[in-house]
Image (tube, rainbow, N blue to C red; front, side, top):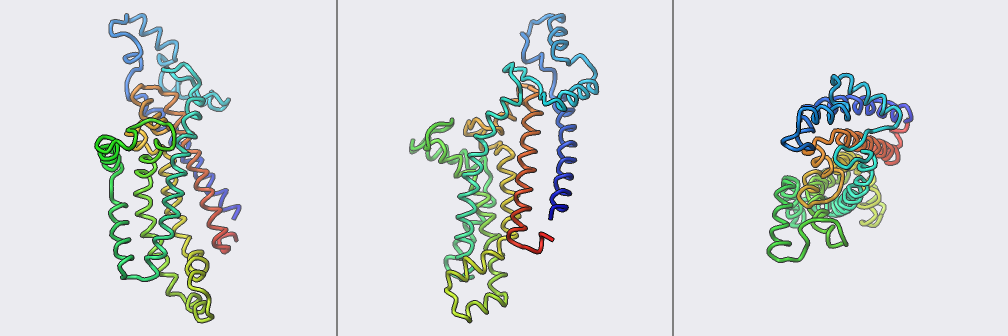
Length: 304
């Protein structure tokens, strides 16, 4: 098990390194930051002084070498726009995104397990058909359309909920609901399919023949063995949410790392772009490790 986790961690580190190289060079293709941060009538001398101060006059490979050297010493660079360490800005936004993603993922996972298990208990029944149709619609609904429609209905028309920002619990309702809909629909389908397979196995029939209570059969014997594929999909969905929930955060003005990435790209704030990508990649790496450990807990055969 330890060798498996070590191999996965090393592969992820290599992927993160490759991602950093791509982000560094691709971000430079967005243009000269001086066009945004200097007046339109700025002199050539002022532009050269601006680029010299930030090190943009050097060849890009020199800039990259300096970035790697600084990164090795824990220096992620300073934000051009805010004149602060980029890592501080990213770490301020990260907990907001993680809180939103964790709340949405927890609700989606619990709800999908209950509904998927009940739908699989009587396949072809009314509840199964309604749950299957609803989950398919949910899994295929685009986030941006859901977010805009939710704002139109609940904020503009009914005026029940605020359109954007971060405040009390009422501000969390729409972002969480929009963010959880697609993972919820997908997970319901996975739970249902996995539970149907488990229900047809011999040990479930044996448990029922021994007179085990049906609730225990569903949520103890069957659910534990059906959770491996569910954990796989849930881990992928959680990693997607941790990736900033860019669309949801941007539409709802949620001050998380996803919105920070978009704003930094628009503002050509290279240090913040690089720091946010690196931190997000590390979070996804940690999520993958947690998922792998969960596999071992659910299936002891993986520990060997």
